[in-house]
Length: 84
Image (cartoon, rainbow, N blue to C red; front, side, top):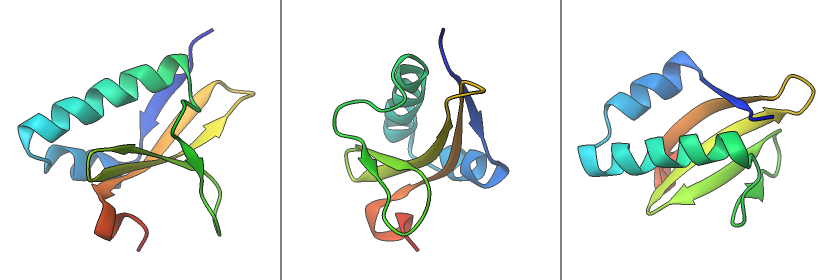
């Protein structure tokens, strides 16, 4: 069964502000997370709950609820801003 991907309001705003080319890559990534919420290259965050996955210079930060089959995206940001 596939996971559902949910975005926090703040992540939606961050996604809307991305340049079109990067926005499209991030959307592709979000679709792929439905099938595999912990793809190769994803890393567990240190100091907080969740995972991160890269797409170019941008990071998508999210949590996974395996019982509910939900992925909550809480940040989509450039690497220098993502962990602040």
